[in-house]
Amino acid sequence: MAEILFEFVRVGHSVKVTAIEPETKIEASVVVPDTLSQDQMKFQALNRLKYILKKKEEE
Image (tube, rainbow, N blue to C red; front, side, top):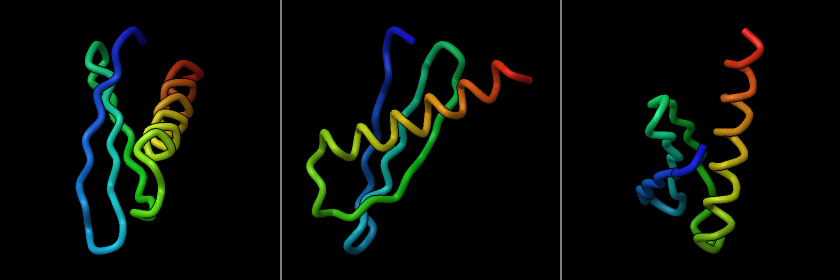
């Protein structure tokens, strides 16, 4: 997991943050309040991506 791409889409008072792992093409999205900092938003999305990658390894 050398590189992670992030996409931010504002939806009303929320932001949909997608973290993408380009090598495996696995992505994870979270919806967070727009009051969070960009680093906090990235942290939430990255944690979700790590969770999904861990689940895939267990399969």
